Image 1 (cartoon, rainbow, N blue to C red):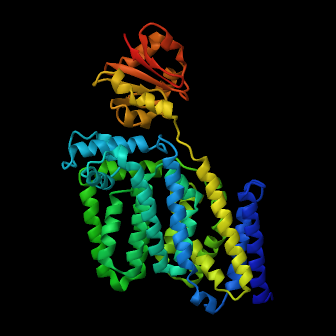
Image 2 (image 1 turned 90 degrees about the vertical axis):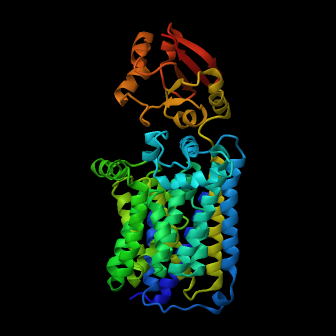
Image 3 (image 1 turned 60 degrees about the horizontal axis):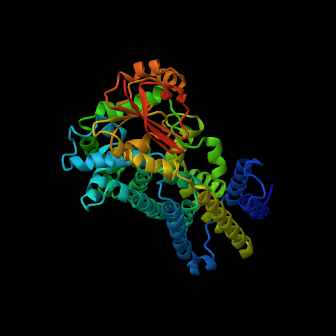
Length: 524
């Protein structure tokens, strides 16, 4: 039988080799896809489990006296702030795809406030997002700031708020040193940066609320649970589903406190009623049923890319999960993590978008797993070498990712879109020929936008859009466009895949054009 000492030494040797490889591919010596690193990470986790088997928890004197976790925490928040602020400050064009949609939706709600159920708000705005995020934007709008002015600072604030929630939740479940490690892994997470880069505002805020709800759940503060969990229901429905799973497991595991849990559940239900009383069928059933009947991946990276983007903390996360299951502690946390893993691995509802939530759970587990490994009796230089290599490699990798972050459209295209109000009538509609530009025209043109596959203004199905894109006949295009109100304009961007020959024929007049965009008026 292999001795514990041999397993322990093997674990640290494997971790050292793994950390060196992390640094090498982060520095660009070879691709992270060149080797099966995910299998290496799994091997490290398995060896760690055997090395830790029946290990008595022991905190060395070095660990007791060390305040390194405070330095790591400060470093993590500094990395988090600058990695988010630099891409926003380096370009006049906002990041992400959803920025324009948020801008438009927030402006519509601000105009109607305090009548949050105003009929003047487009119907799709309420279906696209629950009311919770609009309450936040409405309150900010009362300061006099416009959505275009506060959206970038708001997402940075939400990122920092999520960092605080990671620390509080991890500290409550696993201790302050594990929490500091979790915050560091969050600050360098490629997955979380991608969520920021794509401007997934609701996801980020929803994750912070989820972790706060889990924090109060662990503390058994039943009144504290209600506010973050209830508000989460009105911010991001997919993330609320994760909390619902965790809460159900907690309820079953703590039947002696069923009255308090039931009271907390009733309080959360009141929030759900407040947010959805006038749109339950469309907002809840319309969200769940199509997702179950025909699972959609959602717009995000796939599971394969996810594995190789989490390599810096994947072995620690797997080890942390194995350890948590072995200890039979915190079932609400481990079951929620396994639920997310099942959704993403077996491609169930919105499986790609749930990778963002799964990543957060891996981050918390990684802090727990890494701290548990550091508590093993071993030579100090092993631990310091592994810590240093992991920190440097992950920071280098994040730096490369931040440098590669770019807006989806050019500044010239955005400036062209901003000039549309000067070129069109107030009651004009703008047909956007590519969904690539849809949020930008919606958010910045100050005109009604007709966008492929988006919201209620679109009257064509995909087949009809393809006919319009491919046709070179002006007559056919005019006939198809006759179903829309006039005055009607067509916006083409640089990346619009459309046969533009039809616009060079009678019935179409080019109102304005640039190197990258054009605006064409329907005259017939």
